[in-house]
Image 1 (cartoon, rainbow, N blue to C red):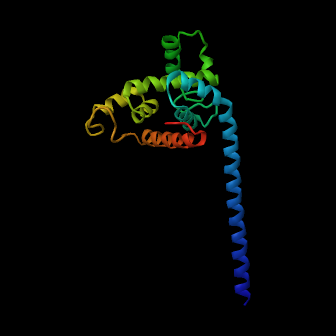
Image 2: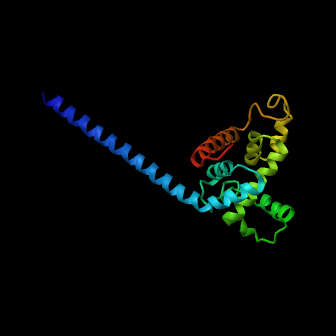
Image 3: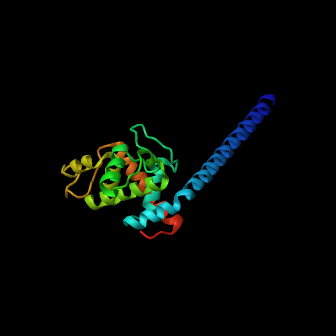
Length: 193
């Protein structure tokens, strides 16, 4: 009898610990979502403005920002990409000097409105070049030269326009994640596709 009583107490204690762990995880997720929503709200108007200026869905811009930086404006990647939309320094400089012709300092890449405007313009440019969002997002992640090469490979692109496979697992996962967030933002803000 004593063994079964101890066993019941042990099971009850384990169930209580498991329940507390689940509650803690739920609270952590809830708090993390609230913090992300606050960061997202800070840049929402800049996203709407840039999306309208360059003809890109605001849901897609939000999805890229969430995937790239989770709305942390001071984010830096291992490769050196910076800011909300994770622009590489060379890309930022090229866009600043050649497209926008602005006399901004290199540090302007950290300004949320500038980073979003440049990143959204770059998405629109890539879409004009590749003609579909899958290849555009792959190019945003892996580089437009790589995607151009993939589109020339009949094992990856039978039509030379769309990709049936993305050979980089990181880029494949990136595209899937952005598109998942895109669908979530379409629903969250009732944007049209």
